[in-house]
Image (cartoon, rainbow, N blue to C red):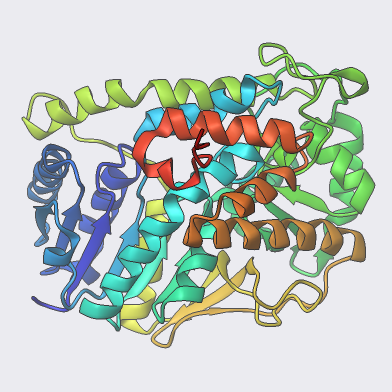
Length: 454
């Protein structure tokens, strides 16, 4: 197989895959390349390949799309591999939110942290490590770019267990930056930012327009526009967000990427007044809109497949996607192939001193330079002590989560759940894990309680 190939594992991703195919056919760098679309659902892989061929034909691109159900058939000689898997698909995500909800735990996303993030890691880590082992065997020089959440735990598992070159990519900080620039009345291209932290809790360390420090202006605008605990429900990101504003006041730096993600890292925002269990239909801190958006997105999967089938059959217009994730992947691949250096706002890589007051083994989100030498994360220096304390605790919890996922150890899985600020104790953690085993079926059987012999 030609080394001029890109392998997408989890090609049934209804938003990401069409965006990636559209961006690839728009880049002359990949003329003559082959895109291998891998999905356990053969019909999904075939549908995506047919959509890709229509996109390429329409734009006159010399790009081939090949469907697969077995990744080992697609991997030999690959230059880039991308993972967007979702073990359990939309129903699995729904279980990750609804199971903890039975015990008074509200989540706004539930795919990275919170008990939902732990449950998702327990399913995703073993599969992603198995994929990485196949890459090491069949395409050892390939660059792996993982999008599957929980991003931090998944990249930690891959890089700790295999020699594969792997990074995690998320568009969250880019989205936050564009919204902040708009709220400051500035063109996004004129605003320079440095973010660092963990995925879905990344902190804005520096914000400038040329030599001008924009942080005083940001602080003023946030103080003028942000709400508080009783703020109305919102789905829009920007300086009005009450949780981000509260964290800004507390820690002195602005967090990303939006309240529905950052709120899940803390114990108070997703509870009722005086620490009571949250009402999932009336969340405080303006968070109801974020939760509703997540549940609606999960429910839209079937409708998206109907559209994709029509596009594959030529009965519907081709997608005109605006997918920042796919756009960034193509920009990274172009820089590696052409050798023209390119700066990424944020990638997820092993720390190894890039943030000296976080654990060296943690996977951190930092800027990176991309070019012929690959993807090189940049050191940003120490974070403020209080922020480092929050992130260190989370990184240590994720380390235990990864160990549980790799070993199938029930006690470690319970410890990972108990260590999450949204989980009130061992009794609730045990109930969540037992219910999750029943809801998810065979992929969670390793964590079932031992049977008591009479």
